[in-house]
Length: 614
Image (cartoon, rainbow, N blue to C red; front, side):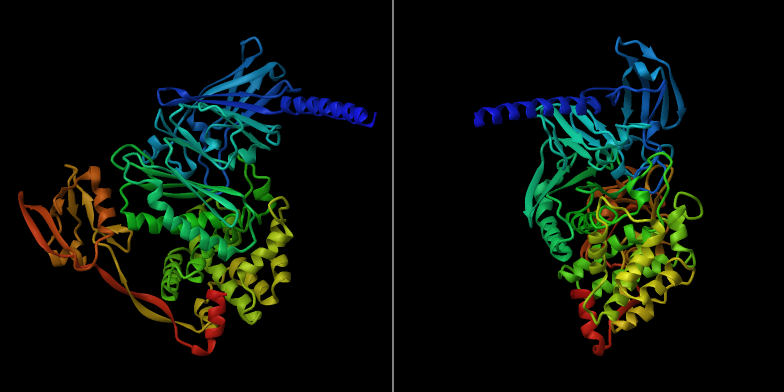
């Protein structure tokens, strides 16, 4: 009898659960993305919403997404938007603006359909430039970069509803993502997300399987690679990446409990119409990375170490510690937060600090990096109020100062770190502060933008509050030498090697003429490499070490030259006054003396070691 009663109760429970589950599923936003039937480089998307009680509904594709701080207007890549009732009859649709469609007769709405163009093949046109890691790629049967915000939108009052996304794809392609595929079919994946923001936070890359996995302190790491010409394999990049991520996890400690983290690496073919915006974009449990396939192995490994480590540290901020502006982000009429100094600055600082902390770079390497950030940050207005800039980052003149968040933002974090170390006799630093903030708030509890400085001051000391008021929310330039002096580090002159064809790694010594030939620019004789070899202004560079170059592969030349070592043998074929000749010699790398820093005060070594190694 007891067992029977339990069975009936259990059966009733299952029945109630099934009814509740059906009711919940009825409220899901169902999305179907077809990657098999690609036409004219476009992908069909079908969205099935739950019932509407209003006569009109508006469907939005994001104007802006978190982490990019620019209005990219993804609606520009949508074509043929249509709405249908249950009988397949078209409903009236009005395109309200670049990123939204207003549907009449919404009570009858059964589905909407539209075609998605990708962004990669429009980059560099100056018309639809989107930062590649936030963009999309459609290469039928080969590769799909599914940054979900570029394919899927939201209805105006239903962004908080669950999403069920079904993606049909060729069996030869595998979808790399940190989401769980709930379908076992080889040609269909089904992903569930709690709300639109959760879906946008999980990119997917489809390509022929080339991935590796390893586990770090309970976190499964997936590295998925797309290399169009097979130049690289995921296994080539994994050892360095694993070393880096183990060091990151050790540096971070227990601040994050992510169980699965996916690194999606897309290598761009610069000889074709392909992605041109190199870098990465952070997500809670993944990172999308775009780099040129032409990069040399050492250079690619080094760049990935810096770029991916930066994005991984975003799991601390803004993904774990963030304001209401971030948590309740409006993808079409966003309000920006005051605290880019923390979201990007602390993250970039950690991406450098952990390397010296874990022995991946030397102390002098770390000082050099900080010195370069100081020099570069001073190209911007050093009196600009950083919180005001962050709040208004989508507008001029603040928009043009955005890159400074990676420079001065990191330096702000460094100075705070040094100040906390000094005030705590070396026992605490900015990482401890971020642990405290993560425990206080966490991913589901955002803070009020105007309360953060006071909260940080209460967790640290009054000197930090003064620093914020003076140098972050104020207009006073930071006296970096004073903060370095606290840890026994002083300014000095250091030698910096350059690269053969670029000045300061930015300004080229070569350009292209109307015949698409590579030529040396007028100030080429300033370049020690060219001067020593005998290359003069106006010389056409025909070939280097037997490889011919022109506009089509100039990027390959620049990339390969970055790996040349002092004293390497080199042969350059030039054309001067219409006649070709070969110049042979040894590589002489351009160099210059720049301001740097070095530890000189041994009496402060204990505090310095706590700062860099604690």
